[in-house]
Structures are given as structure tokens and as C-alpha cells.
Length: 150
Ligand SMILES: CC(C)(COP(=O)(O)OP(=O)(O)OC[C@H]1O[C@@H](n2cnc3c(N)ncnc32)[C@H](O)[C@@H]1OP(=O)(O)O)[C@@H](O)C(=O)NCCC(=O)NCCS
Image 1: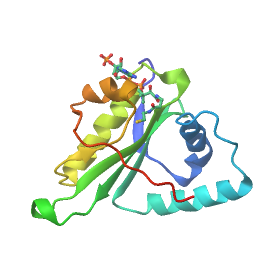
Image 2 (image 1 turned 180 degrees about the vertical axis):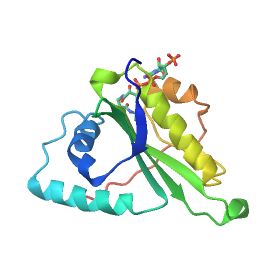
Image 3 (image 1 turned 30 degrees about the vertical axis):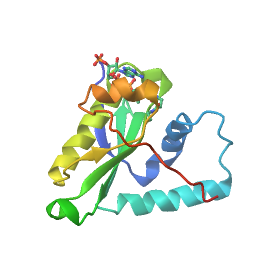
Image 4 (image 1 turned 90 degrees about the horizontal axis):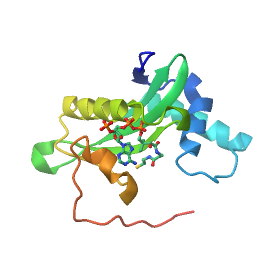
């Protein structure tokens, strides 16, 4: 890539471009209301202060090209070692296929190792699984279960 990408933790001032990126995970989402913005800003402030929550962004020439998050979850088994949960991995349409998603996933895997996680899990569509397999993820036998609470 011509302009060196910077991987860093998200800051409160990243809210607008972050919401724009997250929109690309679920196209057809309805637009954010002012209330949604206020709630998202509050959540972002809390996330940036949570040592177990790594909300990373990839910045290229001052623009957010992608984002991904790792949540380090406490655990009693496995000698009390935590496990990591990766979510919300998205590269802006304009930057796809240039290594941004890979840089973000590799960064989160480094953070998970530093936090002594014994495994990292994630859910993804079948079509995206080859992307994660490039970084060592393997399909696991279990299925995702979900209940919508609102
Ligand atoms: C999946 C996604 C994050 C990949 O980001 P990206 O920045 O384009 O990925 P990279 O350029 O870092 O690709 C890294 C490698 O994975 C490969 N790859 C990327 N997307 C792939 C896909 N969907 N299927 C197979 N391989 C893929 C690339 O070809 C590249 O391979 P290479 O190293 O051999 O060249 C991006 O396509 C995206 O945002 N998609 C929409 C949102 C989404 O589905 N996110 C996943 C939620 S679980």
C-alpha cells in the first residue's frame, strides 16, 4: 500500500466514520437518529476506558479505512485464562483487497496473545470464512445460537 496504514485504538472523535464503517456490515440499515448517535457516543466513551475491549481502527491518510474489535472475556476454566471474541470486522468498500482487514485481525490476535487468551472465537458468514482461515482460524463444529431481545 502506498500510504502506510496506522492501526490504533479508536477515540471518541472517530464516532462518525466508525458508524459509517459499521453501516457497511449491514447495508439497508436505517439511518441513525440523534438519539442513536448520543447512545453510540456514550458506548464509545465506555469502550475506550475498558481495558478488556480493543476497538481498533485502521487509518490511512487521516481516513478510517477499517475497524475491528476484540473483547477479552474472563474465564474460570483453562487455569483462569481469558478467551478473545472478535467482532465487527469491516473494511471500507474503497479500501478492500489492500490488506486492511488482515492488518486489523493480526493486530487483534497480537493483543489477545498479550492478554494471555487461550483461544479467539468469532462468528462469520460462510463466504467470509476463507478470509479468516488465512489468519489461522479453523471452522469449529458448533453452530451459532441467537435470541433477539428487541
Ligand atoms: C471481509 C473483509 C473485512 C476483508 O477485508 P479486506 O481489507 O478486504 O481484506 P484483506 O485485503 O486484508 O485480505 C486479506 C486476505 O484475505 C483475502 N480475502 C479477503 N476477503 C476475502 C473473502 N471474502 N473471501 C476469501 N478471501 C478473502 C484477500 O484476498 C487477502 O488474501 P492474500 O493475502 O492472499 O492477498 C472485507 O471484505 C469486508 O469488510 N467485508 C464486509 C464486512 C464483512 O463481511 N465483515 C466480516 C464480518 S464477520
